[in-house]
Image 1 (spheres, rainbow, N blue to C red):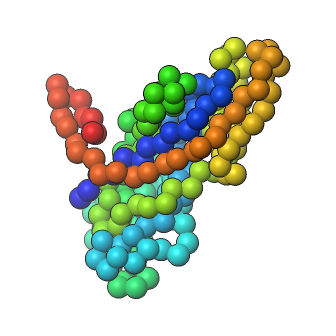
Image 2: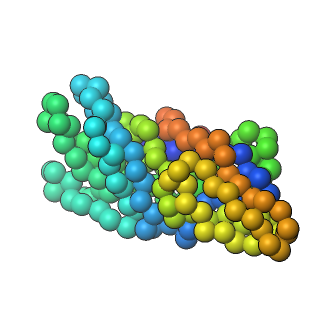
Length: 176
């Protein structure tokens, strides 16, 4: 098993706390990405959809995963189990410092997640406190904050998967 952290960053203009609409571990947020087979290296042609609130039985009948899929080239099974509770919103301070925020942790067996696609279902708040529903499917967002009398925006949106190490300390699990 290999753990992957999906992290992201963006340039935020007069916005902070960019995250999924129902919080950092939104059970209904759909993650779209391609998978790379760890056996043959084939990358799926279509994006895979993974949702925390959905699970399917494992092929061996022992437990469930959020994704069970066969590689189209070699036929080998791969699974992905999401590990909630490790996400964090992207604040303006993190954005300005170039620090990435974690979205989700994935426990992967047989697959490596690649090429995350941002979609609709995000929220952010302006520095004056106005909430915005954000669609990131176009890779950017722009609006105007009436209360703060200023433009707000999100540009230079970037996401990446990186291998993570699981650490247990004082009964708490973290991924670095």
